[in-house]
Amino acid sequence: MDQLPLEGMPRRLYSCTPSRLNTWLDCPRRYRFTYLDRPAPKKGPPWAHNSVGASVHNALAGWWREPYDRRTPAMAGILLANGWIGEGFRDAEQSTAWRDRAREMVMGYVAGLDPSDEPVGVERTVATRTSVIAVSGRVDRLDRRGDELVVVDYKTGRRPLTADDARSSLALAVYAVASSRMLRRTCHRVELHHLPTASIVEWEHTDESLGRHLGRAEEIATEAAAADDAYRAWSGPAPRGSRTASAASAERVPPSVPPQVDALFPPKTGPLCSWCDFRGHCPEGQAAAGDRLPWGGLADE
Image (tube, rainbow, N blue to C red; front, top):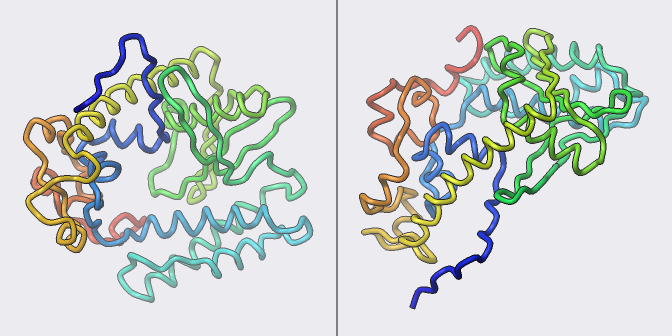
């Protein structure tokens, strides 16, 4: 017999990351595929631009972990080349060309850094709670400038960034709040370091603007949690469907969800559907935008 929630009992905190919240905001169906369906539906092929981004992030994180006297541009280039991820490219020639291009990016970027200016954290996990959410995430770099902390996020996409990108980023705001609470230092500034254009865009938050972002995170979490509960009330300990568990696991397809549950996770269609990892399972997304080649997100492609 199902147990009813007791009147007045506090609701369980919604555990999340900024990525999970943004996925719900961007497309509830993709959210379901990513976080609820088990086994998770099979993704499409890897994207080359994601390989570039991951390779650059890993190299920069590794550079700060090197001893001080080894933090040179040449070392950044070596780390990038040794850790290069070659997935999603058209062929080996394209992969090699982008590896060399990314190596130049990281070498040029670290040439402008002071290797003795030790960050407070590199790839550091920060977390905080409110009455609604328990949110955590990993910061690319956390600097100390004077008495304050600064959240630094590396970007490698082809689109140039503006201050509005830094201002409107839910993730950066959440990282700032969590960093401040964990380390007991003020953190209002967030920065996006765009390596392809060697540019930095920044935003100086106020307590009020950070509070608005945190309130927005709670609103998104409340919506997602209600849908989660409805899904789990249907699925029980394992997703139900017309296929057996072993067949579903082998095929990696979404389970057959009842219409009343599926309606809670509608697709939000648009041009970004071309880049969705799960477009093969989403007829609406396929109709909204055409297929992209795995290397189509690279600049100049």
